[in-house]
Image 1 (cartoon, rainbow, N blue to C red):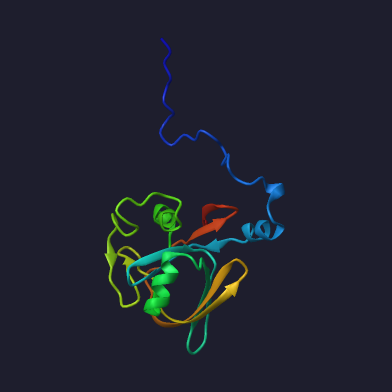
Image 2 (image 1 turned 60 degrees about the horizontal axis):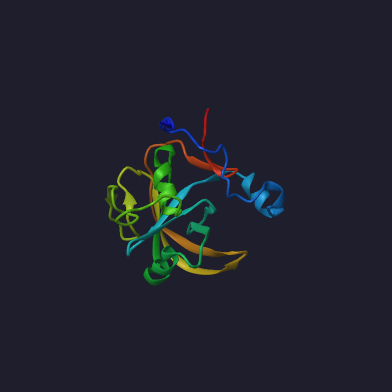
Amino acid sequence: MFHVNPPEPGAQIHGTDPFATPAEARSPVRRLRGRLAAAVTLWTTPGPAGLTVSSTLVADGEPGRMIGLVDDESEFWAAASAAGVFAVVPLGPAHRQLADRFAGLMPAPGGLFRGYDWTSTPYGPVPADAATWAGCRLDGAREFGWALLVEATIEAVELGPDTAPLLHFRGRYRELRD
């Protein structure tokens, strides 16, 4: 009789993704982008719909502005363009699974918003444990590379305690350490 020991909890079968494009075959632009650390945010809109976005920029001014790159074929974009508003939430280290869920990297049985506590806002739901978020009015969008450059006016800002951000760097989540 032959016995196979199951892997330890949390153990990986492969140290890397066996289906990933080898580094030398990737676009140099994509490799450059991977070397720029980016804050991980969650964009939500009434509907509800949402998307993990790591290409987000806030411009100070009167009024403040928000831009980001989103997938033009996403459910988020369809719902946001219909609603004309969306919320942007900076995520923290505790939100890794939530980020993966809304990025389409983790299963979401029952829907993206199921299994989490949400606070309703006029701009879209925000995670109940997210103390900081911005409410945005959609100004427009245009094709930008292989994405859609979304431009918005910031209409509301809720600032909670200063917390560590969740970062995306070289294809993985990272944490900011002092």
